[in-house]
Image 1 (cartoon, rainbow, N blue to C red):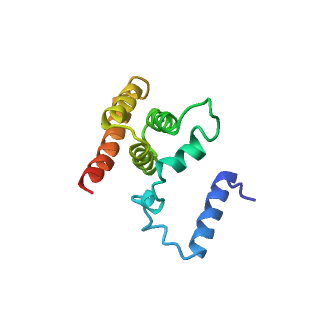
Image 2: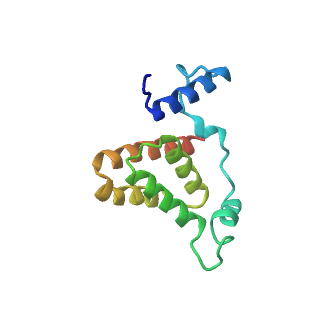
Image 3: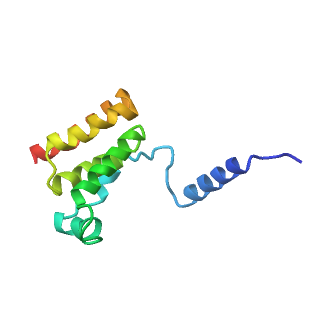
Length: 132
């Protein structure tokens, strides 16, 4: 009887399932995946994430800034989520300066590499926004 790590078995099962769905997992990349999610209008974000939830609470822009801070402090590993959040922050009325300040503040907690990575991702989004 061979003992197999239960986590390895679950990973293998998931990979087998994905392959059965005709997904070429060897060529799959999540880069650009966030483009499948449209940018919500500021009013919609406010309704679902901001004052619509709690009239006396945080607005959508502030909540998105907190999200960006959290994604940065986690090491800026979730690239698609950072780009998506920055895109929504722009729609919610955040300035480049505000976005940069949020990321820079997290450099104290996450370290310079995470801050740098988040700044690069944000800059890519902001540069695309300017050229559009």
